Image (cartoon, rainbow, N blue to C red; front, side, top):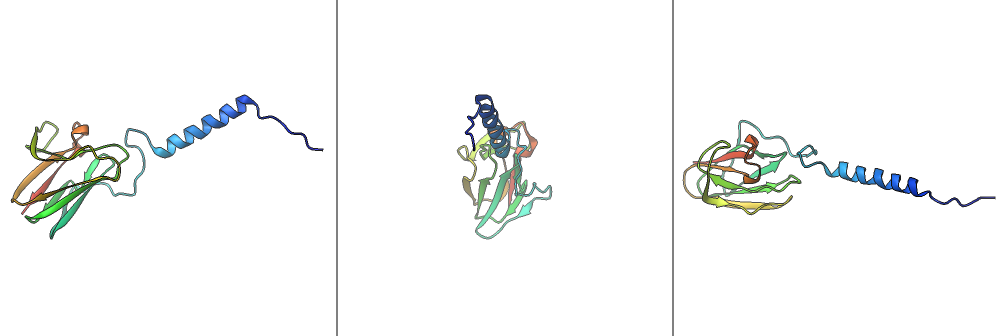
Amino acid sequence: MRMKTAVRPRMLVTALAVGAVMVLAACGGSGGSGTSSTPSPSPWGGSGGGSGSSVSIANYAFSPATLSVKAGTTVTWTNNDSAQHNVVSTDGPGTDAATTSTFASANLSQGRSFSHSFSKVGTYYYECTIHAAMASMHAKVVVK
């Protein structure tokens, strides 16, 4: 003969706590320690051309860090991180650069994109102002 047993409250709480920890671990932490299938940025940059090029925002970095394109190219940045990022033009490289009004996105959630067309030859520096203290959150577009 089988007897029904009641679930003890302490066992139920323990099971729920373990489940919550597993869910949080799968989501990743706020320090960018989660995994991503997007490759790490290349220090050699990339080249674009034609009518469009793209920059991935992943692992708290822009990839490529230097993008070379032809004048008239539209560049699209896509946030592949779980954290929000933005794309804001600056007056030069580095963490001490000041923002400019050349282009600026809103805060981008994961999967969101921002595009800007570059019509004039020059070097355009930009950063994520949310994480401006991180060197990897600074990059440039070189328009030829």
